[in-house]
Length: 397
Image 1 (cartoon, rainbow, N blue to C red):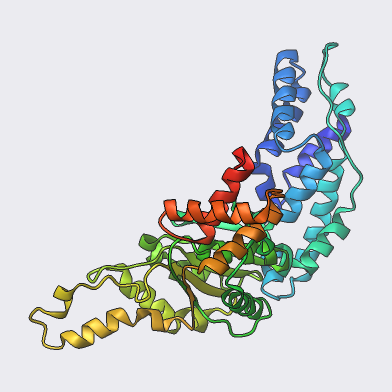
Image 2: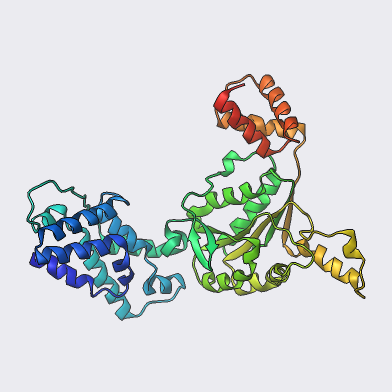
């Protein structure tokens, strides 16, 4: 009992990893220690069961959970190392002491706690493992540009809500090996992304063309491919473009690399968000940080919907305004076209996906049905090919 009481006091001395005390599992653990100290059977049982319920939602190994929380922690030490700074000696001593405390915590077994509870009935057990917290943390920090910290440690895709980054728990898992066709366009995206990862100048990229040709899938597949090298994607909606400068400020010193992804981009003539994107593309992104690039997709080459009436009106220099609007796409450093595939390209995509889905149908019959399917849906595209193969896999032909 005395050992666990001392450990509970040590936890309250945490500075660098103090945020861990706010996590549900550790909050429930400290509540369990308080209940055990008081000795009330009902409170002890409630606290024990509440702790197990929260822990088991993440896994049954208490040691693994604590270590993962430590490695993911966004703290002063990790931030300094991420910026390439050398933490002060006092900070190093603090880190070493707190890792020792958390390692001690991770070794607490369910049997130790059960002995403090005046109850003879069944209580579930959790597992523990032996970990060297100092060595594991040093290893993580040494590769922080790949592993990341905070929410970036366990998630690769993010959206923005109320100005905050929100991890995508179930992101698109498309891989480059699953995509077929547009090899040149895709290779350009890959080369540009590798330049970003290597710290070299990387262009902002516009992928435009017909719907269903794999523009968005290409961007997501590239992120899935290189997430292990420290690449993350943040999807931004058109009406959130004005948040980009704030994101740049917050991400600029992060050791990871980021793609700000804007899907299905287009503007109207009087769109207030037009100027925000224009300012970003004209240099503010590359000038302020080298770890970030904008990737956008659009079904429109010029991004701005322009009508014949826009070319009329009473503006003295109307032509200058129209030219400024329609040339927004030229401000992307790299523009790639994804056109609808011809018959040969479409059937090649069908054949590639058929191999992935292990479709055994004779190829001539499969291609004949694929052509019929495309005609019924208004034309050929990789999306149509995928939908066709998914239907074949589900019900056959």
